[in-house]
Image 1 (cartoon, rainbow, N blue to C red):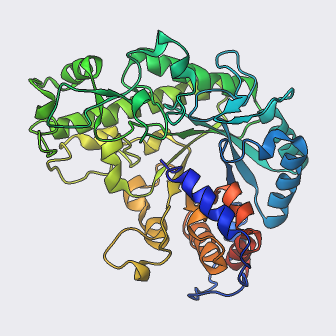
Image 2: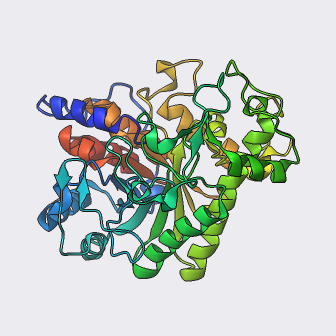
Length: 433
């Protein structure tokens, strides 16, 4: 979800990194400094470490050390370390998954424990590590690399899409869809749920010094994915509905079919059941280990991928999209922390009036949905702001002021656009009295 346009944004940031950095103290739109330092002193300030974007950079221990120290000096207290990215291989010592040594045309051989070293340096610097895993992603479609391409074991377990609704019997395996970020497994299959839960359990068991486990890509790929005999059979059993054709769900012209809203509830419940099972397993291993999840802050768009991150007490108006029981699929109560993906170019509501798409709106309205069921940390897309220091500072400030923490996505963009001073300025604005 959040890593969309990642390769494009990296390319743009590499071009722009040579530009001069504006004065981080310049604030395009002034915000009152009305927060007491004591009220935010315990709020986590986090950096996301994407595996693909930093595959070569962190092949060297010295670079991990240097950037951990840079993060510490800037004010960061926690890091999300991507240890099982969408390619489906491991950046930790796994007995289940192959080790990740090659991605596209880059090869990295480590004779040391990647996650273990991040934990070692974090302990030295009094910081915390949260291990992030792409829950459903097990292959890289662009080059057809990854676990689901390695054997026929995964046939029938990946998501199938009806990409042309006028041809309801023609389904595409996501492994062959180059428009998808990753080849994703089908979350409604019991054998898939058991497998992905075992991977997460392995990380929780082998690394007791972790502060938490973060779930990423814990969803369906898109509204057009999730078809196929196994899923339709599970849907019938769940809903009691008859499916004569896939066009009963999505019409031949791409519209909402007569059982579409039941389909939406079923897909969301499959994801919520998986998250519930993961939480139960993680807490049985280490009750203190936090369970985090990242998803887009635009709740209204999440029905398409089965991510109802709201409270079960949030009840949307029944419609062609939502059943009157859709609220039971809410999973906020299963999380310790929801990382609210306010990934938008617009900082202030005034920049995009009439739209939900601004950092300010997202970080001030989330509780309408979560209703206090879990902690919420605002997160922002650092690649969206390039070298515009005021925007970076404002995004940090608004997120840290209005939620219980802040996460910057992600370190390669911070490095390439030299955003360190701007991030520190945003932190200081919250702490300043």
